[in-house]
Length: 332
Ligand code: UFG
Image (cartoon, rainbow, N blue to C red):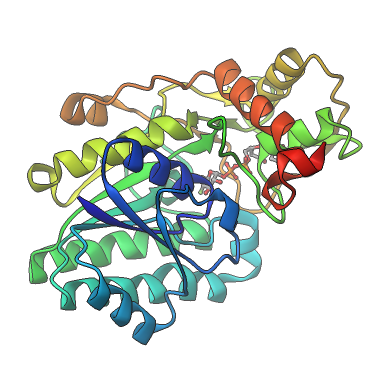
């Protein structure tokens, strides 16, 4: 199949592009490089630098390729930033996504896989969280993703769109060539590894008085390759599952302190840590029930597990200590 991958220069999108190419699909990456990196785009993919706000550019793109499906990763995805800049999140995650949907439907491309998020559940009433759990996001990021899930459902009903929404929990880990490299890094595992390499003086434990066993937040870390596999499976089964949502998580939660210990163990470096205040918009616990995706798509996490995730991220970090902007050779 020929697949348009928006945000394919970003973390999850670039790994999915890599896996799609390995499976013999044709891939065109569309990315504005605001968060992504040109070097993250796999060599076998065609690259188009462009923005979803550019409706004419989207028209040209769909007119010049005969896409079978779209995988939509391009988004703003930082919880705390979304609390400070809700308007930017509405534009990027809702308005621009509508432009994409509009262009693809006008060009008769009817298959779509959406990168949704665990953030749409808010503070869970039941853990592990099943897909039918009520949705009550506690930050603008989660609200924008939920709004677009609803728009997709309207398009399924009114325009026959065939889609699935994949609600990722905490994407983490790396492949040998692709890893997590955000210009402003806020994610726990890359920050822990920056401290391990001496690029930051210490790790801040953001909140130590949550109602969890050790007082720190609990998250469900899922390897980015397992997320990519979920996309491949969803595409394979899309007609049967159109309109469905799936959690993509490992069913297991780890606290911030456990992640810190895993990073110390796997890197064998000292990682100094200090207690710090809570981050705005952080739910205390997010752990997926993965029963539905296992039952319906036969998905099993192959690479997830905190130690394996940290190990793969550490291997990538040692190869790309400054991230993508400096090549491994140049980094010496
Ligand atoms: N944390 C720290 N110190 C840090 C960084 C993070 O203690 O320096 C903590 C956070 O407070 C949180 C946990 O580590 O409890 C994980 O934080 P991340 O920033 O790595 O991930 P989030 O859980 O905030 O965000 C992820 C995805 C979002 C998604 C969200 C669901 O990045 O896209 O999960 O809430 F929406």
